[in-house]
Image 1: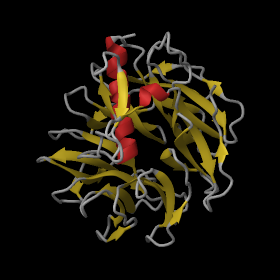
Image 2: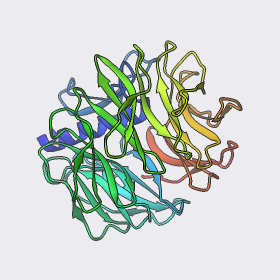
Image 3: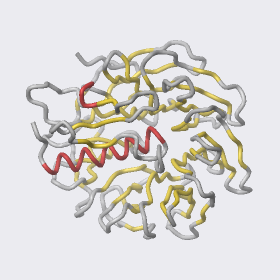
Image 4: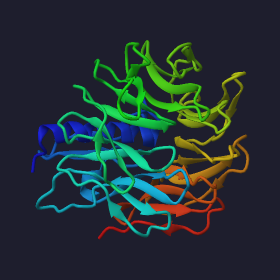
Length: 375
């Protein structure tokens, strides 16, 4: 069954952003890992892997659960999923779900004929912002954490994708002017402000925890670099002026250090930079790619995904690069790590048994728990 035009566009946006999330955003592994294909005549989502001659067809392994996001108090996890799936009546659709942190009380919050994805919690945990293609274009909506009180807060001719929610402002990306730029707005959709306007895509934006600055990655002069600017878009500074790609910035809780992914040493590795003094620490060092850094809430540790054994596994290291620890060891591959607010668990998506589900594990590598199990 061929997906309708708006759904194809929406899934392409989601797949693009999943690619940035998994791989770090640009170059050979930055945003191009997951791609859309119609080689077989059907609509598919494919993932090239270094140890496979042919890309892995993700659409043949659905249903899948992706991108776990903890509520601010750590009591719930939001994610998006294509768990309503049947080979005979496939609609290429994903929806938003919420569950308790132990996997109980799973609830489907959206039920539309178009993709709903990329949930972001409000600071008080009362609402969720998310991307939806239900209006034809990809727009941002908010809803109460139980799925009620749905509100559309953007209305543009391009795709609008939420990045974060801080106090009463939402940081988001939009390609309404051509390339993807960084924007911000009030949480009711008012006060929309374009913060970047350079040529090329400017994506993967993140507010510093103190709300004073924004980090993002930008394409400029044929390269991908890491930038920081004030929250109002002023004083943009390129932190990584190098010929190879640097991307997916992630702020430490101190609003000073940034973890990011760089190909500066021949393959993608995780680094930490002090934005005040430009001091650089290499966190990972392997012959294959390491990606998707995620800070613990106390700023002492970093979780990331490594392909060093030709199989993407979850690792944790101290913030100075010491204490490397492999957390998972299975034939599947892991992605999208996220620390619980109290630092006692790491949620991640895992592709095992022909499907992708949400798991948690403690930082010492024990107590692996499968939270979702869609049959």
